[in-house]
Length: 274
Image (cartoon, rainbow, N blue to C red; front, top):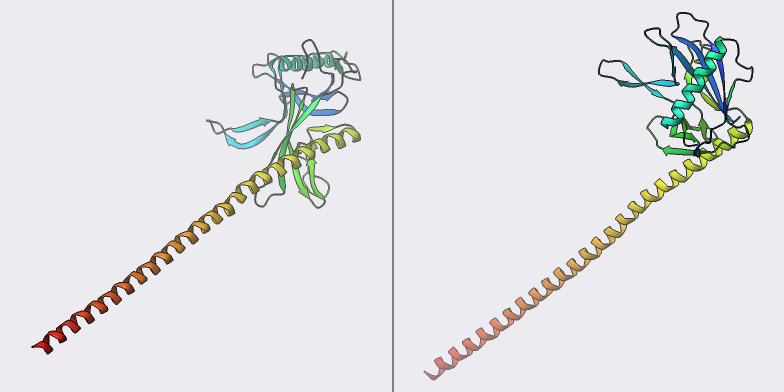
């Protein structure tokens, strides 16, 4: 996380829009720490035509607002008020320099290049029937900027990381859909590093989920054994009780027979005396 007074290192490049009918007057590409780039940040003209504002890259969701308009979700954006103000201000400043022809070819640089870029990853594993997606991930830069909508996809060689992209309006030569990156590592080394960090977190979370699931399932056999033991005890009690009842009934029967014999013998003796 950025310390007080510390500024994250990043540089901004501006490409002006050639479509005069487009409300987006230009697009910014921002590279953080010479390691990861975020593209398609739009500089849009306000409805009243008085000035412009910064619109972060977003994707259309399936949800609708109260008026029936599609809801868009930002993919990359500042997550603190201070960095939001700094970041959008820097982009607008770079845009003004571009219009004036004063923007350096290396872009508009913010912060100290010697500052290391700190980041952390967050992963949510999940599986959906019929889908090869195995989870979603986000990367937090200095706890000030987030890159989300990173997907973990199950491929032929296992799970791999796919950075956020959007479908282009122009199809490829073979007619297939083409996708353009929104955020991506700019070096092979950092791509490998960030992919490993995301996959390690995915496997950790996935294993934890499985352990918790197995932990719950293991309780069930134990409960079944307890129930089974109780059933055996109950059956033994019933069996013992049944045997005791039978024994008691047999005893009563024998006693009754003996009593009848005694009565019969007494009656015979009385008859003989008469």
